[in-house]
Image (tube, rainbow, N blue to C red):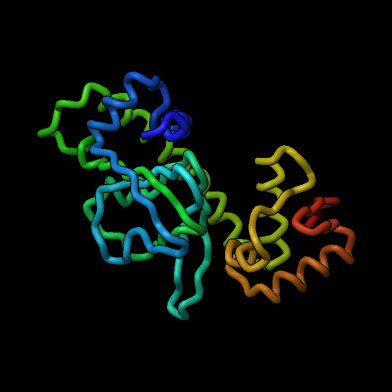
Length: 224
């Protein structure tokens, strides 16, 4: 494992409190292994039970939901240094609804979380710290999930878009939001058709609610 890869791993929240010496021992405890994936590769097929959680070294991974009409809606896009599918890895149930797929060529570090929940395995001296970090990550993910539910329960597409932009504005600490996704992916985030989102954004612009400059949207007012 390269020094750069170790630096990325140490930035991950799951390894908060670790240093260069302890990280190697922790990775050994978790039976960590590096895996390379091509673009649009499904990491965990639906119905498959796994105890592995991928930590992204390079590239992106999209977590989406596919409805009965085969329409895909992106819930979250994970980037380098982030770990995902923690709930699946800690569960004794197979994944039945989430499409977990690479976005571009992606390199991940697979972590075997069964080493933490199997009480017959007590060899890892870092189990308590890792469990503490996992609990913190899962709690934060629950808050983000609540934000997504808040968006999806809005009655109108305009309300969904404004609320999404407000949330992004808060994260980026700016009234001008930089979208790191395409219009198609933006539409998936609010569970709508791309054409409907484009029309609604144009309508919001004409009504003086927003300004649009390529992949940047500035919130002018948010009275709904």
